[in-house]
Image (cartoon, rainbow, N blue to C red; front, side, top):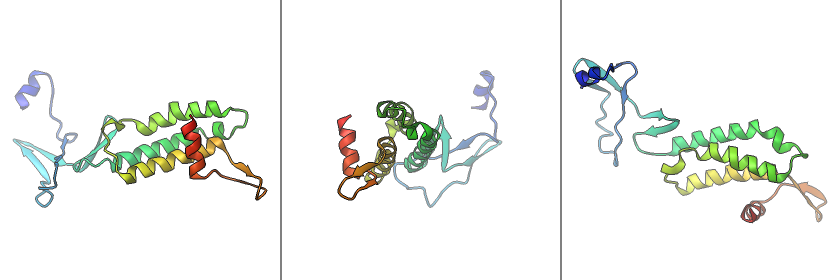
Length: 161
């Protein structure tokens, strides 16, 4: 392996090279290998690592990736807060900002996700938060005060789009 790599001008860097075992079932969990030794090289094992902006783990669980995507989308949402709060900007433009920037950050590399009910709930909670900011409060004539939209009202608005 080392000779083949040298033929292409590559060198193995023991400090930067790590390995990860990805299994369908957790058969080897009890007998985890700490280090992998190949000839003179010793490689460290990893449980999670980031590859091309996506967090991969040995259990093939997307919970880490989903949490990171929601955090990044939340940071983006807060960076755009001044636009969402600005009353001079139309709701249509605010929705375009959400769809073109926040949704792209949120769903980056989501093609490979297998979502559970819990994952969908987390995504829906974040999405409703953004919609509530875009739509703003509504005046309740019965109680004569301002209130935030209910989940059903947000869902109705979302379905109209």
